[in-house]
Length: 313
Image (cartoon, rainbow, N blue to C red; front, side, top):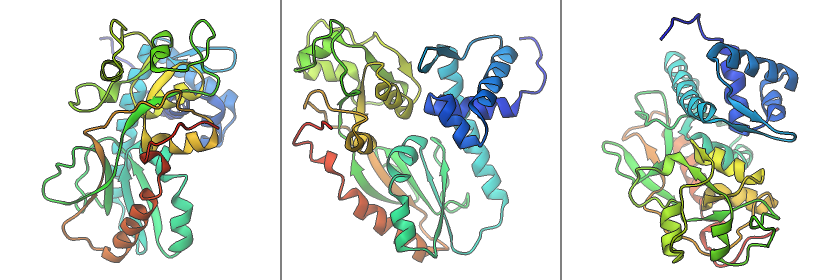
């Protein structure tokens, strides 16, 4: 491998934001710059790497294979960087540091967090996103929320909520011949959107498991775009690129807003769930207790966990 100059950090930040939202406009809003500035930084990074990171369409952008791989790595790197900076900073009174995955933060926690602030204006929550496990208590993290089997030794673990899986797509998504989706068999004629994070996790349903449960024999689950995270797969579905397998808690807000619909009612249980992880001994116990009580109450109201009806706008 030929040596490179130092990587352009501003370009990496711009690319990571654009990859996360699949939108230069949204990335620009987040970074307080113009969409043209984001586009310029992404092109600069592509020139630096010698490869295209996005496929640019008329109204939307999608990640190339190289772009998806880089996006997944950068999400972890920036999450670890944030944690490293927090470990170096002194703890501030009245601040609560919550570590969670980017997908959960964006799709479930962020739309609700204003209610916690309203009920507890004296507690300032800082959300740190990373898919890596963190050592709560030792890394200046007060509480963590993780998606897994719940086997986390040496800490307090409470189940937050289950995560059943079902197909989701943008309103109006149809079969390749234009026919509306009316039954599970119709999904054999749409593009499957895949989530890489489900691979190699026994008990976590993927498209092959869903097709088998729906008794759709001879339908290949391999075709369709692959994204490195649940969040990006869901965003691809919102933009009309096919049908994704959604985790009930993470698609609730998009179902409610009409950005996604459930084309069929079939769903599968999931061996993984969402868990609250707390240190055995916490320095800010009262704030942590308040946050955990609030988040349990919020989880108890999730309508998608009942799965007793189709969700259409």
